[in-house]
Every structure is written in structure tokens, then in C-alpha cells.
Image 1 (spheres, one colour):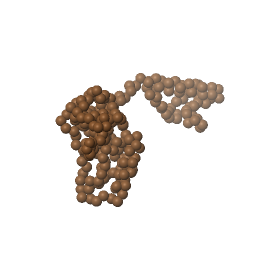
Image 2: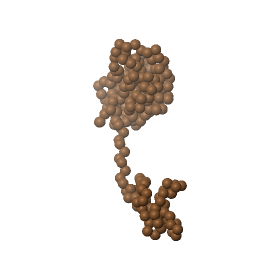
Image 3: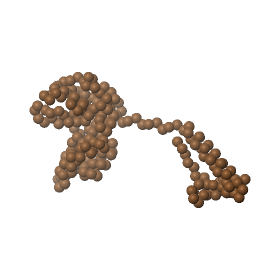
Image 4: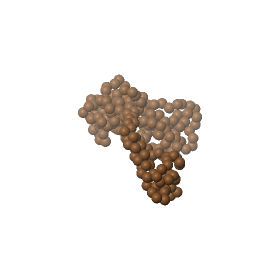
Length: 232
């Protein structure tokens, strides 16, 4: 790390070449003399700065914080596009289509115990406990999936008796049409609606930036996270 130091006027003097002054063209400190033309003072300042740089070079680097971990209990499907952690409540027809959810990475289908098969070739598991880091486009597992009793329910927004504003449906439709744009920003919208207390959206992970963006662009009042932070 380089540290640049501003030396106040008048701090340095040069016995051989005269007083130290500020250069009107560069803002640096320079020296003048009818005989030496400031050579000694310039060399002295360069030596001072070199010493500061050498002294700072050995400063220890700040440790890089570990990525935050998140957990969720969900079924996992092996789809044509890859592994998907299924968001609950997305299978509404019979036979059910492949589920909707978030991609998983750093895990292989061979690590999964398959519990069901769909007509299109998709296969799925019983509920699994998943732990990993959010990689903006997938949950990157840091531990092997473990069997669990039930899936996590959908996050529930606050309720009320208010009426939806006139532009609520249009805002949410526009948000759904912008899925590719939002996912490029790491914002995976899993659900949206109006609860009587305001419009809401459920995202994979809300690190603060999702709330700010959805509020400013789609007038979303409440943003909920499906994946929950964990210290495991």
C-alpha cells in the first residue's frame, strides 16, 4: 500500500540551496537556488517519500471477510437445466411440471437420493437441508445435502385491509417481465403480490440491495428472503 504525504510549506529547508517553496505549476514542493537550482532539496524529498513507501510496504493486509452462509429446507429436482431447489407451492397441476426455484451449484446429482420421477424425465428428492453461499446466480453448497423432515414454508408478508393502488398489478407484471435483468443483478424474485398491507416480493436472498432496487423501480413495499442466514 502506498501512502502519499503532504508536506506543509516551510517544514523543509535546504542549507545549500535556499528555502523550499511550492511549485506553481505542479503543486509539489521544490527548492530554488541561484547556484544549485534546488537539486539537493528535491533529492531530499524523494528520499523521504521512498522511506515512507518502504515503511508502509510491510503493513499487513486486511483479512477478506468470509461469504455469508444461508440455509433452506427444500426438495431438489434434477432438471434439464441443472439442479434446482424448489420453491414451495409451485406445483399446481397434475402431473406436476418441473418446479420453480433457484439453481444449486457445487453439488452433483450422484449425491442425491431420488424420491420421484416426472413424465418429462425430471427427477426429485425428499426434503433436504441445504447450506451454502449465495453466488448471485445459485446457492453454492458448502456442505453435503442432508435429509430433513419437511420443507420450509413460504415467507409470509405483513397483512392488512388496505386496497391495492391502481398501478400495483402493472408494477408486478413489469417486474416479472424484467426477470433476466433482475437475475443479472443477483435478484431472484420467487413470488410477488399484494397483502393488504402493501405490495411484497419474495427473493432468494435480500442483502439490502434487492430491497432498495425493487422499491425504487417497482414500488415494492416489503421484500422477504427465502434463504435464511445461518452460522452453521
